[in-house]
Length: 112
Image 1 (tube, rainbow, N blue to C red):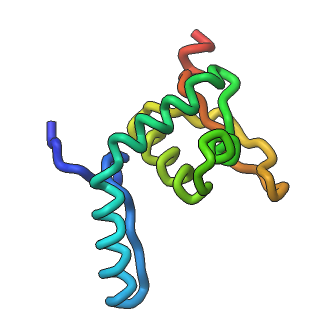
Image 2: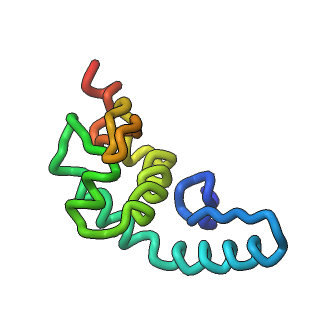
């Protein structure tokens, strides 16, 4: 198996930008985030685990951990790509729009 870190596998932070400078800044920032990704992923898994099959939305996790939402949402997507978190539906977020709820328990396993 290829052990290189990659965004599509949820093992590296993503980056984007429209201008050359923005892309360079984004790439540098993503590289720094990737360096600390393993402990952050562990922190996210530990925070989601107590919610069990009911799951939680990223806002709940951010509030529980006392960290910015922008630190939680990308990690949830990465963990979902790695099949460590599972999308279980949509729920109203703090601003009233529906957001994805995640669980550490695969709903397909629950149905079996």
